Image 1 (spheres, one colour):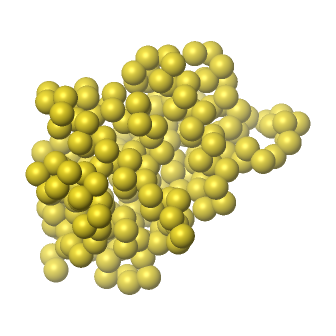
Image 2 (image 1 turned 90 degrees about the vertical axis):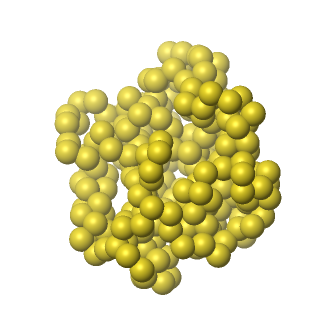
Length: 224
């Protein structure tokens, strides 16, 4: 297996492909990504401009995909496929999910104010799950070399399947060599250290005297 592949190996989730309407309904990279997610035990991601796909509401996802896809029917199929992929967070054996989201993603009006308000509410709600952690990287943390790049680290019980996923509109990459895995893991660790404390909706209101991810999300949502 090469260290860098364009499509990844597959054995998973014929059900996801069927739910997406068949192999013609999604790109090959998207199907490869769904299979990779189904085999992962840990997903760690950084997203600089939009809410991560795993945490998107249907209307937010539809707005994001509709902005880049000229064919409305294809955008609908892509949206359905994205929502189906989210089941790895809610199944019997959900993956551990860690996200560092740049504050810019909270302010970008995808689909309008009402859509954004519901999306931010969803972001807080899903963070109640014990296996989900969301941190916001605030503007005041400044520029870091990785902060403009979206990537996902997939970890599993089989180290040979560990993968860095880099999304691209025409040619997404699946990186599996140790150099890339270690490099992106270090970048995510640094982003996490610079980001605000994770969302913890179960904590008492008085515990948010200092700024954290939850208080920032709430501030942006209430301003919409």
